[in-house]
Amino acid sequence: MKKTVTTFAKAKASGEKLTMLTAYDYSTAKLMDEAGVDSILVGDSLGNVVLGYEDTVSVTMEDMIHHGAAVARGAKEALVVIDMPFMSYQTSVYDAVVNAGRLMKEGRANAVKLEGGVEVAPQIKAITQAGIPVCAHIGLTPQSINAFGGFKVQGKTEAAAQKLIDDALVVQDAGAFAVVLECVPEKLATLVTEKLDIPTIGIGAGNGCDGQVLVYADMLGMFSDFTPKFVKRFAETGAMMKQGFEQYIKEVKEGTYPSAEHTYAIADDVIEKLY
Ligand SMILES: Nc1nc(=O)c2c([nH]1)NC[C@@H]1CN(c3ccc(C(=O)N[C@@H](CCC(=O)O)C(=O)O)cc3)CN21
Ligand SMILES: CC(C)C(=O)C(=O)O
Ligand SMILES: [Mg+2]
Image 1 (cartoon, rainbow, N blue to C red):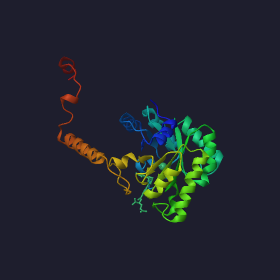
Image 2: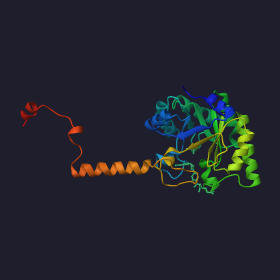
Image 3: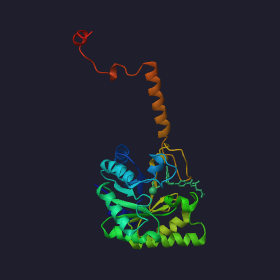
Image 4: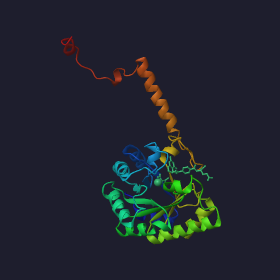
């Protein structure tokens, strides 16, 4: 059965942990969906993972729609959330609603996600009122890398921790159905989780959140440009892929692939006439 924002609300009430993973293409989304993940995030981390950028700043609406629609075709049961890229919602409430609408209509998202707290509350409210579920994202917000001056754990001082709590309550009031907490000390994320009625989805926010999210290429050992402390490698898919590529190269070079098993035949009397 298709998971919905109601599934998220019920999980908060029952205490069942929510699982979310990123995906950027049909085949990966299909495997994840079959594995039973609750939600698939088409993250703007595709800028790093798929497009090879240093950060997520250059990711466009067209990138998100192109990859989002592919993921949506592979996700039969998982709730598909598409990230709003940098500058698709910061500029105005109007832009935010128009672009969220495009992610729903063209990307076939079930919900959108955007970064920020108090400063984007009007956008969250307007998008929600348009009938589009919004997942908020606070703590480390990677689209603001140039303002942060690097990727660092957030909310460590009393003032910063208070700001995080305020942001969480404000995005909830604005109508968000869930909130991602990124790079936040475990005890602070647990406190925020206890204060909120909507589920918290942690990434680098410890074990007290209502759910977890990871970039799939990180947890499968396929991405190595940077490795945040929160990444656990659940498989060594990168090493397996490399080994497969090496084996293919070896067999083609030595002439053992393709053998009869992977080759098409034509009747001898037909081919002989053509010599
Ligand atoms: N592949 C990938 N995985 C991600 O998790 C991810 C992306 N891409 N792209 C967008 C953002 C960038 N993210 C990042 C990137 C680096 C750190 C990092 O290196 N953090 C330091 C914190 C050090 C500290 O302040 O103590 C770490 O060592 O974990 C964290 C999140 C998370 N997102
Ligand atoms: C890391 C997650 C939460 C994200 O926003 C992304 O993958 O873009
Ligand atoms: Mg993102």
